Image (cartoon, rainbow, N blue to C red; front, side):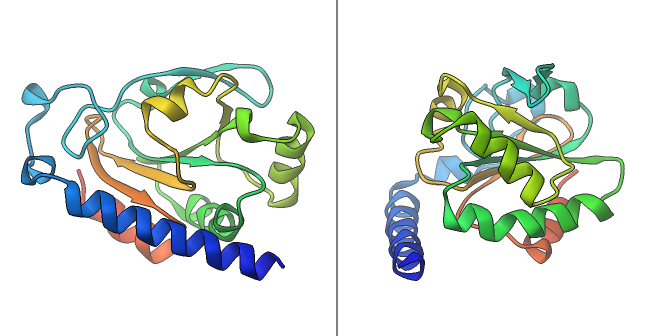
Length: 180
């Protein structure tokens, strides 16, 4: 049963990705300097800042990672592709250098219970920061309607890549090496 749901999810992601890629304008892929960047969620835009709570109730902002490369990941605990990528994210995080961070945003409005989030973090031994999007505002801003959705943000806060679907370590290595 899970395999069928997983396959249907992958098919939906492929369809979504092919539709959104086909409609993107060439303007979306133009590299722009930090001074010319507008706040937005397209490649080349300055990533919108946000403030969310960590699992232990502390405030955390995207801008807390200024000067670092950031893998910003949106997920839910019930999502099979999210479960598939978490071990890869943890492996990447455990071997990363000090100039790279992973920030995982749980779409808490899509969860069955808050207990599921804590259990997920414990089950997968997640050590990278996890924040809770309690109202769904950040997920909506970043258009994380299909999950997992990931943004690669350079050390100047500029979005360099958007990915829908699960990641693995070689993908993350390549993306991070390819940006400043």
